[in-house]
Length: 247
Image (cartoon, rainbow, N blue to C red; front, side):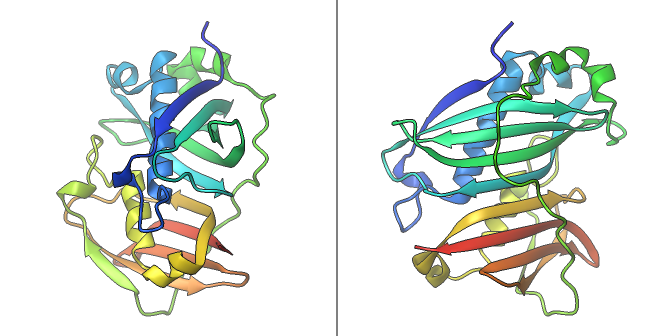
């Protein structure tokens, strides 16, 4: 049996950096999702294997904390492992390191497996019984579990967009990282000159599909924290909590 923890190396190219010459949060999230995909595929539970059983993995929640963003021409090491498996969800964790094994971040994620025809969650232990063999309950992910993100109400939307071709992924809904990209576009450049995103929480509540007209609502909270609520008409389809730190 393969090891429970997977370790994967990514190189930071110029085209994944922003004007600060650092990799962006969506890029780091993408690297994490790439690592998760490879880790699952190598152990028999990746996209190709479960799609043959008419299933797909869907990201439900993601919390990521970064203390230091990797810069241009540097390498990022992503470790990932399955922390727990319940009836309808799996909990997967990540650790981010620089080439000198310095820890620069962690992430927690929750995934559901859906039936591709009904779009309903499936019983994971029943449909994928061997997955529990890869649970590593001993490896520690020290960041806090996501607290509930309240809706944003009674404010004017900060921006809106219509879901287009480039937003849609292989499961025919908005790619999970595309939500993050659109959320960050709410902020101006000065926000990223003076601060960096230390913690980002996102909960996916409904599937966004091609042609949906979405609006983003922002609420400034205390201690450099804000909430972004992405809505389709009056329905929230995802909510984010963003915590900033001064550079």
